[in-house]
Length: 602
Image (cartoon, rainbow, N blue to C red; front, top):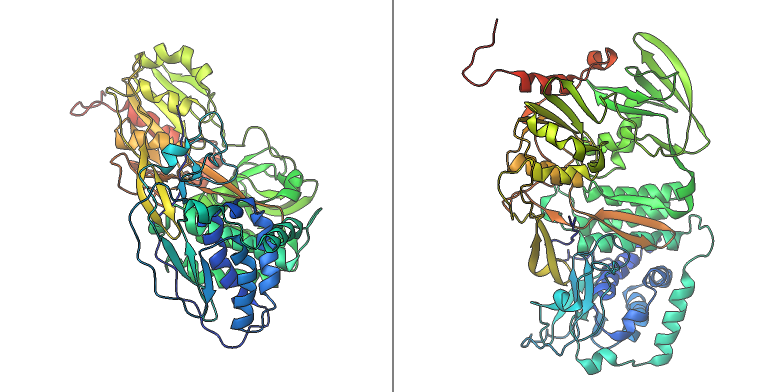
């Protein structure tokens, strides 16, 4: 079954620029101006010369050239030297001539068109980017990539199409979004263009980068623009006050100038991604990938305390409460790490505690309350386990009592479950565990739960035709699941919580919207849509959600909401300490309850 990905969203137009007469000492307003123009030109200016640019190197080069500009005139001249050599149709200045009239659609024009995040290295085949009247696509999955005609269809460029961008310090820019064949191929000042391309390719630092300010600022520039033009969920942000992505650019740049270590730079980028409220959003350091590790415990926030729910460290038993982690009280440590995570409150908490990240080989001191006994322990940071830790559960496929089965879709594979389907079909009840990320069995079990075929369209990818949320319709997808024998017709209960994200929520969306079972537990993570990737200067790798996913009606929100349980239930500290699985106990009770209208036997 295809799990497609998508990206984009409608966003408000560019915010008004702050007009300053005196240049800031750190040149931040100059970098703001460069950043607002950079993304528009990189992703939407269609001249042939622009496709030859190393755009990450260009980001570093641009930051270094605009920062010293002493006034608006010097800034404008620096921007012109950077962008105008790319070709015709780019104008920068304190004022622009009257806007041209937009003409008729013309398929001979050259313009960028995207299906979602159709740039760079992506996972899956629903993303694509291509220029009209040009061969090829930027999609990277050769097995299942969109074809150029699919990307560019239904979005014929119009003569004279352009976008005006407010920069900073009183400057504005106009960028052509469609060019004639002749203009797209025009090279103009070849020497200036060749020098620019060579300088961009040499701008990126070699070897392990430190806290170089220009490279750090360029990382903000690139990341801010990718989210600004390709993130699909801007209309769904819920945090109070709502995030103003345009206004936030300056603050992130200022924070980056104050970062003096690589760790601090990563935190700046993490806060930028956190503003997008995207559970898939993340920032990884290429140069630290081999040293990333986790502590040998898993914890959850229960009854206002950080409770260990799984452990391979004898000194930190299940049920103990962490009171201090490293040099911080556990509550303060959790709050600090949650602020650097992105997504819903439930997901940010689960993400931080399900895998306590650290540097491999180091030791982390923790203090704990072990059933009323206060003590400390030293935990060694080890590599990420192949199988994530989880609270004690029954075997992945097991009969709990005659005719009542338990199936853990986060551990049991289709290969394991398939031979048991005849017995599951005869069962009076089945408990499906979805407290986490499922295996292939998550989707493969659905045909055995359905009574009719479905063609719901709940995944949506925008056809992006320009910056700042310009779209020309969507491509809408679903899994098109058909019933399959044997049918599991007994009572069905699904266990879930905030650890269920993405693919897990796709499966749970079927359960909730098609009424395939009773859901027990807590809301899911509230983030769905396949992950998109991009790299930024300095060795930073970013992830974000590239697909807009709705309920099965094709419109109602799931993002930042998740899938609510029919029976809300959280584990208790006492239950964990007693070795009980209170959610599983509740599921069994629901299956064992008498049919409606029938009194229990005495």
